[in-house]
Image (cartoon, rainbow over all chains, first blue to last red; front, side, top):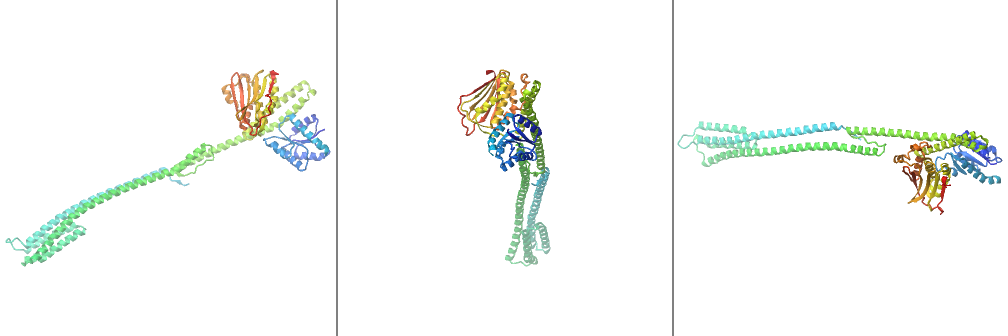
Length: 131
Length: 503
């Protein structure tokens, strides 16, 4: 089962994402800010490492971009899908330059989100198995 | 810059000084001329009298001669007669002396005459009266000396008279010239004063004019340097106060405008999260149709549709707010037209099918790539197609086409619906504007779609326009620039996507 870590500061958004993603058949772990997301990753260890991480770019305490930067500094290669308000056209490029695997603007169509997750999960599975 | 005294006070002082100067010069000149005239008349009279007196002296001397040497055979020379004649002569000398005044020339001549007459009396008259006849040479010499000096006095008096006339003329001329020079000087001073005044006004007035032009040109930070006469300085201050007020108002307006933009941005942003959640859950429910009864499913579907509409409106509002705040950005890159048109066509087809409208997409063969943000152009096309779909009646025809026009690609969306009146065409791109004709009153929407389309097309450096014949339909056209390194898209037969009634 594909394992996802989803971080968003809005608990209702988080709940909605969790429920819908569970219906789609994913194993979902949630976090309400960046610090909690890192905490969940530590808890998971290498055994239950998520296959894809979904990060809201803007969160209190520690933003999604900061989590992304920290992950890439630590050498983690888990695919990260950034969810951003997409305030300007350059944002996707900026996210990619920080190490994001992909980027989806808010608000998104559900099918687009699932498509991107599937793409990233497919890319990462062979790596995950080999590690 | 120094503030000069008031213009009016300077003019007043200037006129007073000028008047005083003119009065002084005129009075002095006239007085002087009067004096010259009086002196001249006095001199002429005096010298004329002196001339007369010199004639009398001559006569007195002849009487003296007669007393000293009476005609032969008449009587003897008499001492008494000589004394009387001498006294007479002396009186004439006294009168003449009074008349010589301080003229040295005349005095000398008179003294000479007196001396010669004395010499003559001592050496000729007294001896004759005493009975001694002087030597003929001596008498003749001394007598001639007296006569000559008498003549000299008369001549000198006449000369003095002539000189006096000459002097008076010279003096009159000089005085006249002086007065003329004085008047000219006063007028020159007035001229300098006035030109000074005008010059002192010119620079500050020039600055005011330039300032007013700059202000009118929109530079609200314009202020003028205060200077010149008090009146102009006051005008300058009033100008600066006006500019301050304008700038303050403009700042306030900008602040309110920014607040409004921020407000809309914040509100739209804050609205988005709950709407996303509602839409997400509603979609989740509709996806689980089998576990809902039909009423529950219906409710879930309505929630999903309404929240989708709400989300679209919020996105439109956000786009406009960003556009107003200058934050709406696009990322243009060479974009092939055909896949873009097909994508929008696919996305819109269900809506046309719903109203049994015939929908065709035509893309010209070998069309070069456009320099555009594909998502944004798709948004523009979708907005135009949504409008056509909404306003055209069931069974109508809607076309979307892309053709090359010069260095641009023209996209057109046309329908054969009710069309728009001329007045409506003027407002069709205004935000919140919606066609108000009876038939279309029930059409939903925020009235933001075309305003956003216009903003987006203009962000691409393109232009959008609408044409319509009432009753025959409307056409919306916009152009986008061809990409610089844009290569024509792969040659394919022009495709035609048909939807709705045609299928």
